[in-house]
Image 1 (cartoon, rainbow, N blue to C red):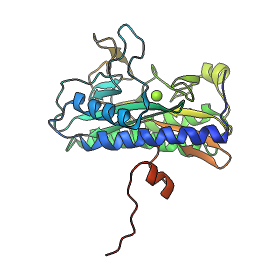
Image 2: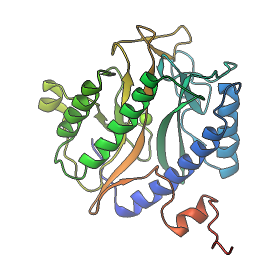
Image 3: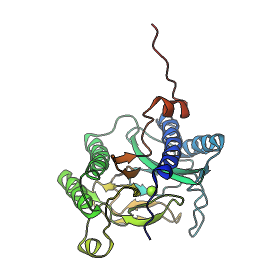
Image 4: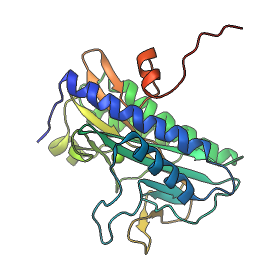
Amino acid sequence: MLKLKSSREIEAMRNAGLVVWEAHQIAKRLVRPGTTTGEIDQAVEDFFHEKNVVPLFKGVPGPVPFPAVCCISVNDEVVHGIPGSRKLQEGDVISIDTGCRLKGWCGDCAYTHAVGQVTDDVQKLLDCTSGVLELAIKLMGSRNRWGDVASEMATFVRDYGFSVVENFVGHGIGKNMHEDPQVPNFCSPSFRRKHDFELEPGLVIAVEPMVNMGTKKVRVLPDFWTQSTNDGKYSAHFEHTIAITDGGPLVLTAAPQSDEEKEMTGVVTTTEGS
Ligand code: MG
């Protein structure tokens, strides 16, 4: 059952989204050759603890419960990578996905960063994946059904010569991280027939395109969690939690916009006096 949110509830979700945004700023500052993925995860865990919010990923059930507050996936790892002792190297790409619950409401967001200098092809992969998320946000303001957005996303990625991962999709989000509906980044005839949904005010979804340089096929590693590309080529992943409001799509995990939001996130607003 698809649960629409009131404007009050969307406001509460924005507050959770701001904490997730801030966590990503902390993580991003640590992305450089020599940092371990475990150090980045620890910094985010410390920040969530300090903010008194509940990490969403730690303890997610599986063959083994997910052990960290971030999914960190490097290079050919697509999603659900487990942070640990792996040291980042120049030319890597690192996808950091994290979320938290604040006062009962969830936010979920992912970015992929280049570590130092990457090749032109890899930069193109990052541009394509962040670009297709931007496209989706824009189209959510003008299309009536998700299937229309999703099919344009797939075309956008195909035009780059890359492939959309189909094994994993975005999701509704609210009091729980994963709610209905499922939000694919491609549109199949059966999705249109059976699972498509209307883009109406009150809908809140996490849109999270995963794009592979080569094959769309993925495989799970022996750690039970990490999903890797079948051909070993690089993959990227970007995600935002997005609400449809009467005024259009609102990115709940975006950077602070108003002075009030800047104050909440500790982004200092000073009048330049010099
Ligand atoms: Mg998600």
